Length: 376
Image 1 (cartoon, helix red, strand yellow):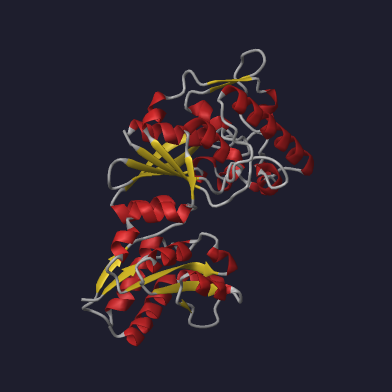
Image 2 (cartoon, rainbow, N blue to C red):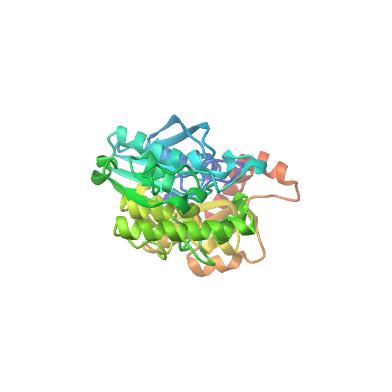
C-alpha cells in the first residue's frame, strides 16, 4: 500500500494546521481510497505552534490567567503534549503585541512577567521539558519580568525590586537568584527562535523590533543602553556573557533572559516541531509528503515549515509537494531547498476575504485534482 504523509502548517486566518491536513486528506481520498494517509500538523515555532503540537501528539490546551504586557490580567494558554512530559508555550499568549492596543504599546514598561508565570504553571504539571516559542512580543525587558515571576530578584542600589519594563533596567544594580524556582534545574528548556539578532547594537532587540512595539527613536537608544547595562550585570552576577549571542535579541531580549537564567537552548522552530511530532519516523517509508501554508515566497527558505518538512523528507528520498494560498513571483527559490512542485489552491480571481472563507474547499479540491494526476 502506498503511503502519503500530510504535513502542512496553518493557513493563517483561514485554517489551523489540522484543518488543512483534514482538507488535503479528504480531497486525496476521493480519488485514492486505498492509500494510507498519515497526518502530521506542523508549525515553525510562531503563532499556532501550541495548537499544532497538541493536535499532532494527542495532547491538550490549558488556560490560565496571567499578567499581561502592561500589568493587567489576561487569559493565556499553553499546551501539554501527548507524552505528558512536555509543555509548549507561546510567549505571545502572555506577553504578545496583539494583547496591547496600538495606542498603548510601550516597551519602556511592557513586561514578560506573564511568560514566567506560564513557565511556573507548566512546572506545576510536573513536566520534564518546556518548548517556548518567542515570536510576537510586546516587550523589550530582556526577560527581566520572566525571571522575576520565577523567583529571581532584580534589585536597585537600595536593594529594592525594580519595576516592570525596559526602562527600569537602567536602575538594576544586582541580580539575586537565591530564590529562583529550583524545579528549573530539572527541566530541559528549548526555545523556538528563528532570528539571529544579538541583544544590543544596530541589529539588536531595540533597534530592529522596538519601532513596531511603539518605541520612539530616543526610546530605542535608551532601551539599547539599558539592555547593555542589563547584560553587564548578568555577566558579573550570573557568570554568563549573553550580549552578542545570535538570537539573544529575540522577543525584546527574552532570548537573552532564557539563556542566562534557564540555561535554554535556542533552536530553529521548525526543527523543534519536527522533533516533537516525530515527523521523520512517519517519513521513513513514505511515498510522498504534502506540505504547505498560507503563502510561499522568497522568505519561505528561511526556516518556514514547508522547507523544514522538505529537508527532512529528502533524508529519505521522499518527493515533496507544497500547496499554498498565495505564491509570489519569487517563490521558485524553494525548488533549490527540497520542494519538488508547488500549487496554488486559489482557483481564480477572488478577494482575500473570499480566499480565506473558502480555504477548506479550495485546499480539498486542489488535493483532489492532484490525486487524479498521481494515480498511485
